[in-house]
Image 1 (cartoon, rainbow, N blue to C red):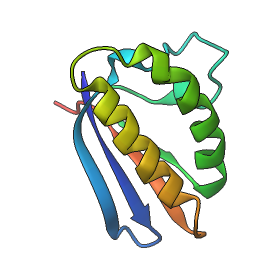
Image 2 (cartoon, rainbow, N blue to C red):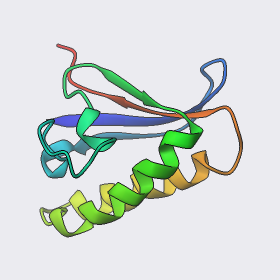
Image 3 (cartoon, rainbow, N blue to C red):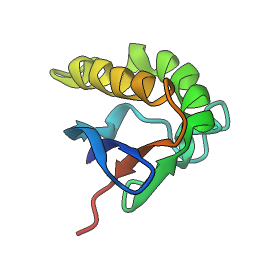
Image 4 (cartoon, helix red, strand yellow):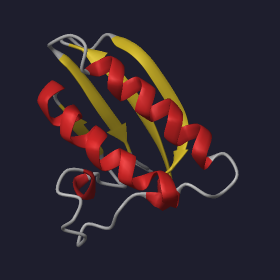
Length: 101
């Protein structure tokens, strides 16, 4: 199931977006070893603040080995770069937008 991932600043201005990120390699909700990423809702929006993005990045590194399908590694790298940008200034948010149809 694909996600769109956006980096936003306070007020909602979009600073960057990656569309069509396949979430197949994201952890299941029941996987307690990923306390932040397991909360990404595949059918709704999930927003992480600047402090949460730092934890998300630690967990994201552990997901690299799961990104094996064609294009997944490229998406993995792109989301990582977007998230890293989100930690450089306060009042930045990483938004995962799931399938809302």
